[in-house]
Image (cartoon, rainbow, N blue to C red; front, top):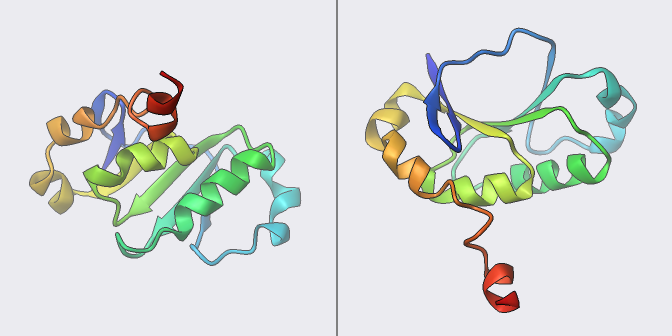
Length: 123
């Protein structure tokens, strides 16, 4: 099983539509023409130290993708703000990780818009 993390905490997976799974080394030019018909794109994170998924999310949003964007795999609570800032709507984690990093740790990082260095520089 898995847990879906959103800004307000943990949720069960409620997606029932068509999704497209992407590896972190996917060349987006090969799928760009298929994005319009896809309701959700899931980007795999094979390791917490592999940040290529953040770049894919940013590029998908720059290409105009407006559907649901999910990070799946080894994403830590400390990386949640970065995931949201790069364009992800939610993160899918294992039950084991959810037991080690409870919902309170993820919600603590949910105020991702106010706590970035650019906001502090503008103040």
